[in-house]
Image (cartoon, rainbow, N blue to C red; front, top):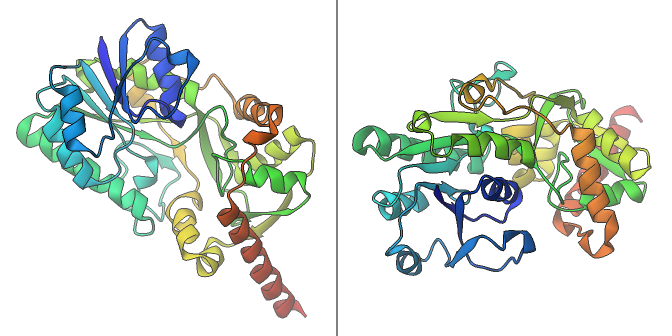
Length: 335
């Protein structure tokens, strides 16, 4: 098949790209061409900013694709343009949505594609819901050949999944320095993590499959761990003890409303996923990389080169501020 990835070099799209190449398909990336990867020597890169419609139209003018996978659409306004761009140029348009769009507060920890979409806390999730609604309308009214994918917390090489951030070394560095780590709630809510190589199996198995057109699939791991266990596993891989401090999500939101969206809109609730729908079409999909294996690979990657150990100064400061106010509150309550 002739496949176009919008993006293609990010967290979840990198391993999906490698799997598509392994399967012998012709793969194109549409992006700004800023990331060079020797493993993508067979990829044909169309250099354009997807939000620059004129530049994209020039790149697409004489090209058609069996499948287009859009990893970097976040708002309905962006998708209105995508629909116009690709309605005559592909037999399948795959939109990467988010499992964070499911109903919050959660009323049941087991989630399927039929779980309602409503998130009053997080703008990111509401935007993804609006995107899905627009695409469903385009499919129902005009036959736009969409497939919607809802991944949960997906990580790959260079990502260390924590409750605060995953794409940098912030929390790991705090652990190495013996600093406290804030974990929301009591740390016992169950969270599902999916390695990008596992996600790639589910995603690529749906590409070019006519039974996937007009459908929604969640592609999530089968291993659920408590947030305490996740952080303790990371600390163990680093050879240190995790100094965890449990703080209610509402309290975190009072200290920093932006991060409050992140916790109240997603990570405060147990999330276990029924992926039987995708398995019916892609029987080979399952969890092959458990968290202890996947996070070891990521930590080893960071420790190989200190220049990779970037810290998000803003998030680090918020953690310190939450700890400051929490300890003051506890001291005042029990003094």
